[in-house]
Length: 221
Image 1 (cartoon, rainbow, N blue to C red):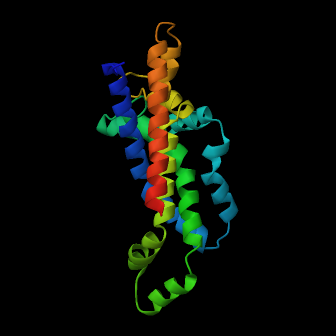
Image 2: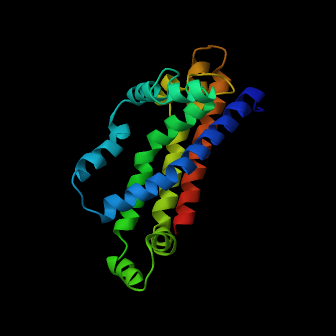
Image 3: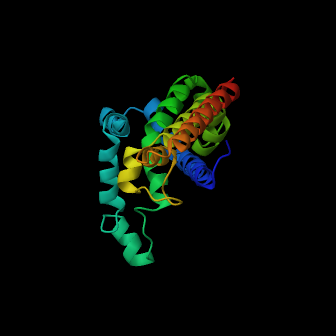
């Protein structure tokens, strides 16, 4: 039962979107996780709640907000379109943004937990020896947060592979452009003659998710 060109296209696009969105989410997740774990400031609870909104709001709502911001006539999208003639919504870039936003809180949560477990005395000792913030980040925070970073990346990656609502609202369901695995499964379910395609796509999704979890467990040790 060979995989068709259609399924290969969907799979490669899904891996592309999931990988890029997770890479993009890494650095802001690391910085925000550090501040939430190590700093106390006014409005910290509000910021924490705002970051976790994608986990509690319906994904379609997130997609709607992204459309307002990055749509052709949106707050940011209008600038890109009128200045650079770049359209963000309903492109693969929109799929990446939607996935990054939906996976972002999972990334932050994982890294934050790891940073919270770092002994503050290590950071204080480094500061006493003259290490600046960037050096502390590179030599202490990132190495000692490796497990949280890897776990967060895998969770963000897996969340991207399963993303549906925000993607279809903000990026659409365009084959070869924004149609990732969940959207392809949804589209194939509308065709009574596409049962085998659905089964294969579901199987591919399960295989990738299990592989990602196994890799995460292995690298986190």
